[in-house]
Image 1 (cartoon, helix red, strand yellow):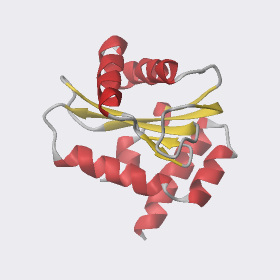
Image 2 (image 1 turned 90 degrees about the vertical axis):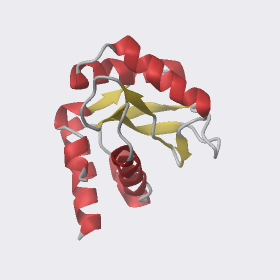
Image 3 (image 1 turned 120 degrees about the vertical axis):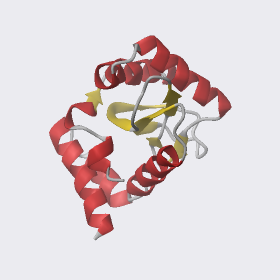
Length: 154
């Protein structure tokens, strides 16, 4: 599995107007609607349902919200960088500003977990996160993410 397969260039966005976790999840759902062709409300509900099981803030300003969705055929991702970090109920109590959302078919098994592990490993790199935080161009953010994963594999 490759990050460039999960994250298309048009699935990267810099967001300046989010002030809460709920609004962030709605922004993710709105972005994903255009990416995966499902209704924003269904995506939002699935993200909320997953968050109710436990927060997906993994620490160090990073969150990995994810959801399984009916009528989806492959695992897909979206990356958002927030201009102002928000509280996300992360285990380390730090606000988040780097969000990589994953959407998987409801009947997928291992692919969903592999994708989560790949994204988690990639965003555990403090140097990469610093570069992501220093840039606000979506194309540059996409390149940083996909190049980072390619260089980790080498």
